[in-house]
Length: 395
Image (tube, rainbow, N blue to C red; front, side, top):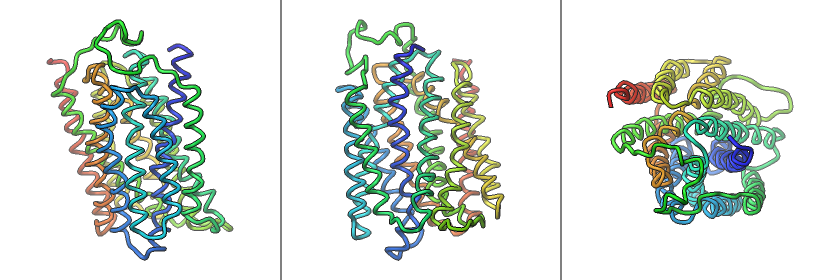
């Protein structure tokens, strides 16, 4: 991988980190929102779903737009839109206005994954793509872990409100937008029917699509996305019952710091998976990750005290390993000409259908029902991935 390509990947990966900061701002403050507006987990779970459904549905339109206009323009719109809707959330004075702000923020955030992933896939070769997506995933995990860590620091004094938190989040969005406008250079700005316009990274790539295997892969993505959404939305609430407390640290700060610790383990998982995600072993890697989720989710269903932190740390490490395998398989099953749309459609079904996870978790009566049910979902996903792995050599 050249230095130029590596710098581009790091720059795009910063935008990936930030999209997850925007995503996980809501789980960091959902208890505070619920307390202010006197609503329970059913309503705050629906709030999470309202953010996630447009996060998924909007991605397929974005994929089409990226194919026509290139990634850079769409990435700038994503950053500007998320910054603006953070301001709207911060100025909201009713629960309905919060719903509207989350709906709009999820819509703008939906732009990132098809634009960013397509850009990386077009600038890399099959041999370097796993490592590139590993770096991309590491930055995503840093954003995922950084969001509750930031919230833990901000809310530790108990004096900052959730509205002020959202207003503050608009600033990094605007700053990164300016950096990308100045520094981001893509070699592929729009779809061309001429082979001479392909990036160098694609010249030696066998460009054959496989619609049937892509459809099967999407099934694993939906099931994994359902687990991810349910796990992430109520993670600080789950850790609130771990029993940890420190002097001069509010409960809001404590539970978000614990969530940051848990999600930091996902960075390790992304790094390991990025090294392992090579052509020839992608399907088996995805199968292992999904099946390994099952016992860990069952552990979460009955863990108490400090074991809640341990169980969630190990689950985060394993669960986040799936992304380099999954995203590399999309690049393998979708032709380069339609790859932006392929990533967009994947995000649409994974985040929109998977976005029902917080609603499921909010309505589930106990942790046993919540995480036991998610273990069943993981088992089904592992079996579907096994179908891809066992049929690979026969085709």
